[in-house]
Length: 528
Image (cartoon, rainbow, N blue to C red; front, side):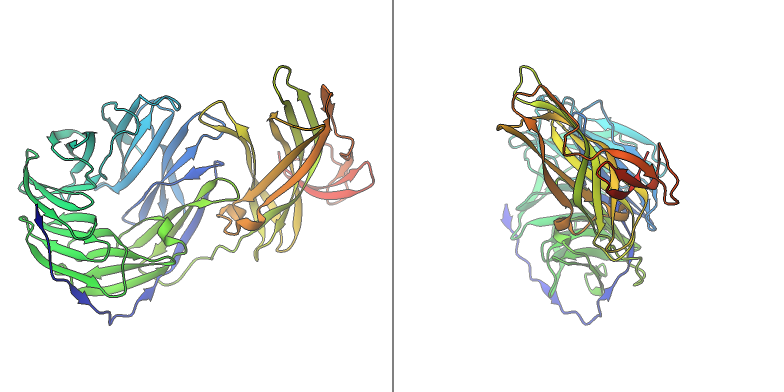
């Protein structure tokens, strides 16, 4: 393998970087704990993968959502290539039919480590899908490349079999296998192909040229780690962290360049008009465009906070960024779509809520005979405060109860809509049964720490997590009890009235005034 050295032409920027506008922001909040693995853009639409991890069920499930530039979720479809309790996503790629390919792996049973599989799933523009499932393998022991969509709309990927051995799969756009071949190498990061049928593969330290049977033709050692490759009109474009190279089908260098002041290159795109890639900083992303001979055309800069922690994709119309955002506990998915054609922005996310108090209305603790704990049931209300600068009409309230036997946990996580909390104001929200789980309560006095936290104010990600959580010690009873009901310290509800003073017995989705047995009152929103 020969050492590869090239002379870089450094490009100074005389162009004005243009800040781009925010099209929309979404906070996915239909589950307690979620993360994203990848996004893909296709024309004016985008696709995002969401994985729900073990909430009240065994294992984890994944789905893909299609979103337009206005933030409308057009459809949401499960990723179910094979009956499995765990399905993971590795990456998404846009298809030539305005749809998306999903590549990933899964495990049939969440807590058994020897029944695993790789899958490839294709969704059309309407969410219809077809699947290709590869053979089982020893769970998490293999390594895969990313999925590649070639210039001819064919698909390439590699899967490691054993050390130093991998299999290259070449498929058509309908997921039919055109050919598969064994390669005498492993840990391939990405593959592509020339029109003559030769394949290209990049590893962390080298570039390989293989013939149409998988036999090696040329090997190039690289001075810096390759990030991305793409073949366009039989010309290879290779992206590293701080440089881009242009090469012919014999891996002879034609051009190379770097743009002064920009680094952390990723997301290489080559079409008939230009070459594009992104430079990712901590709080901004720049889309760099060059001609096919790598002469700089323009730089578009977008302010994106914590951009190094996000998955992104772009085209000439928009750039999409999604983040697995840490909440007070666990995480959710924050999604943003930025225009590359306009500098105007939609409303910026200024929502900020938090829980500042909890009032139990019913407590029951039953001694779990033969086990060191109690079955604990708690009902109550949370006082939610608006710390932001805009009214809040939606909030999610969450409470972690405990682990299931395996592969999941039990939670309370409910959205509340139809409310109005002005900036600086607070509102009591009736939660109903917020805890129903076993608890180990040591000591002579049985004390349970009740913790709740809010999220998704106005259905957006709450960016200030420092004020979201509230914890309170509840005295359940004393050692020796078999059962405790309605803690003596809990106030009894005497009557409820609507805002016009009319008594109501079974309020639903409305504000009420509650009169308690100690003479105090509360204004509270009660959902169904």
